[in-house]
Length: 221
Image 1 (cartoon, rainbow, N blue to C red):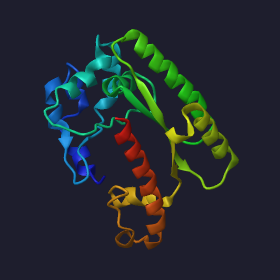
Image 2: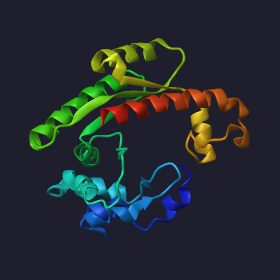
Image 3: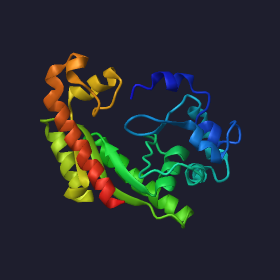
C-alpha cells in the first residue's frame, strides 16, 4: 500500500493498545489508524512480535482486540482483520473480534490439514467463550495456477467442504507482485506508469476476483 515510511516511523502499535505494557489503552485504537484514499488501516509493527507472548499469559488477552474495536469512535462499514498465519492469541483474538472467518489458503495439500486445525480451534474458542458464535464464511484460494492437478484437486476438496459458491479463487499473476513493487493496491496500480504495460489484462482478472469476494462479504454481513 506504499505505507513503508508510516510503518517504520510509527511510535505506537497494537502492542501499546492491547497490553498493559504499552502506552495506550483499549480506547486509543483510533490513534493507530492511517487513512488512505481506498480504506483506512492499522499497520503491523515489530512491537507486535511481543504481543503474542503477552496475550498468551494475560487473563482475558484473547478478547483484547474485541474490546478495543468495541471502543472505536470511527464508524466503518466493514473491518477486516488480517491475522497471522499461525494459531495463537492474535489469531484467536481476530476470530473473537470479528466472529466471521474467510479462510485464505494456497491451493496445496497442506491447506487441508490447516483448515481442519482451524475448525478445531474455532470449536475450542466457542466452548471456552460460549457467548461467541464464529461463522465460517468460506475460503479464498490464492495464487491459483492456470494448470496443475494438485491445485485442481485441492480446489475441488474446498468446494466439497464449503460449497462451491463459497470458494473463491485468485489467479496466480505477476501483476500482484508488480503492484507491491509499485507500492500500491492492485486497484490503483498503473501498468503503463510502472513499466509493465502487458499487465493490463491480468490486472483486470485479479480485480474481478477481488470484487467477487468483496460483493459476497457485503451480502453475507
